[in-house]
Amino acid sequence: MYSFSSAARVADSLAKSSERAVPSFSELFRDHTSFVRRVLAKLGVPDADLDDVSQEVFLGVHRNLPRFEGRASLHTWIYGICQRRAVDYRRQIKMRTRRESCVPALLEGDEPANQERSLARLEAQRRLAKFLGELDKEKLPVFVLYEIEGVPMDEVARRVRCARPTAYSRLYAARRLLEVRVARLHGQR
Image (tube, rainbow, N blue to C red; front, side, top):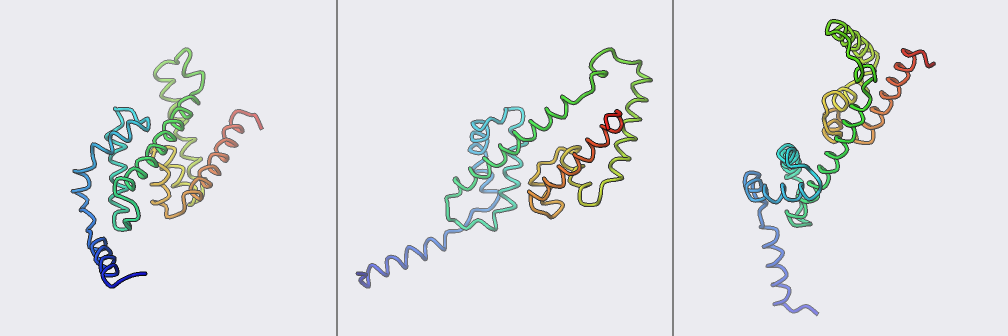
C-alpha cells in the first residue's frame, strides 16, 4: 500500500526522469566517438573504413535523435545503430566483391590494345545507358544508388521514400532485367 510519502517519492523520481535532457548532437559526438569506433572495430569493420562507418552511425544518431524516447540508455541505443551500420557495411562489401568477381574473363586474360579496350568500355557504357533508360521510374533510382553509387540500402530507401523491403524488391527486379539483357546479348536465350 502506498503512503503519501512513497507516492511523493515516485512522483519526484518521475519528474526528474522526464526532466533529464537528451544531450545535444555535438555532446553525443564528443562523448561517444571512441565508443562507436571500438564497437565498430569489434563488429568487424576494418580500421581503414572506421571513419566512414562511424560517420554513418552519427548520421543515424543525428537523424533519429529527436525520436529517442529514453527507453534504453544512450549507450545501448547508439550500440544498436552501430550494429545495423556494421551489418550494412558487411553487406556492401559482399556486394562489391560479387560485382568485382563478375569481371569478364577477357579482361583478366590477354589485354587488348588500349584503343580496343577504350572502344569496349564505350560500348559497355552505351549498353548500360540503354538499359538504364529502359528501367521504370521506381527501379532506376534504386539500381543506380545501390549498384553504381554504392549507397547503403537504408539510405536508398530513405532517398526514394519507400520501405527498405520495397527498395530491395525494386533492386532485385532491376537485376533480373539486367540478367535477361546480358543473356540475350550473349545469345543464351
